[in-house]
Length: 324
Ligand code: CP
Image (cartoon, rainbow, N blue to C red):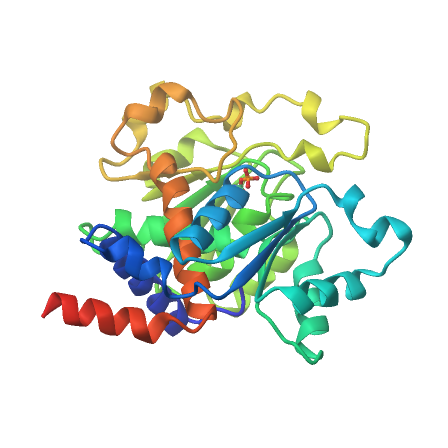
């Protein structure tokens, strides 16, 4: 997430809107599908995923990219002892993009170092790395927040409340870093004792002069938020003892009866998948943006792929000509 500055984020926001709009025009889908038709992508998912995998795959389809995946790493020559570096170099031998999710932190960053110093550098797109980062999720979260606040004064100065297992939630870590790019944004980190946001992110926010509060209360803060970003317990990171999955998160769950406490235009977000922390009865409330957020993932990732694949100027020119 630190790779994005405001200018790049604004470009991505604009390109995402343009791609969405073009796709709805006559021949628009065909135009988009011809932009990167000669390109190939490797989807290397060494960790479970539904929506990140599917939205990246669909985003590639939109841009006309041919995809291959590795989702079961027991079929990779890594089981024969091949190093991660050699595996990544092999991907870059055959593919023009590597989209990767990995249980270890910084794996995408390491992959980028490997391919950038090779004779065939290709873009590496981080689809989630360990407990550390999920930057493309943060990009689609930002897109959803900005769209939600378009008619309510924009992002600047808004209060974003993040709740749940913030200690191990990689989406909130990446999102916190992108929120620094908007003047006056305040963050409420609401988590049970022992599950709060880690110090490295708080230090990052301090350096960027972002105001935040850290609290072990949930309900008393709901009325202050312009957006409530719920997260689930990340007990897949338990060390085989299931300790945290036995804990009750009832006090950090958004329930139907809490809706009356929220501001009238408050955006409710969740990266999904959810468990009990977000009541399905909320789904039909106009403030619930999480299914739209999920769909925005496909468009944001299509824009990111178009940008990294060099198709951005053509698409912008095409849209400008259509709009004249
Ligand atoms: N939000 C998210 O990363 O979901 P998946 O694990 O289903 O990809």
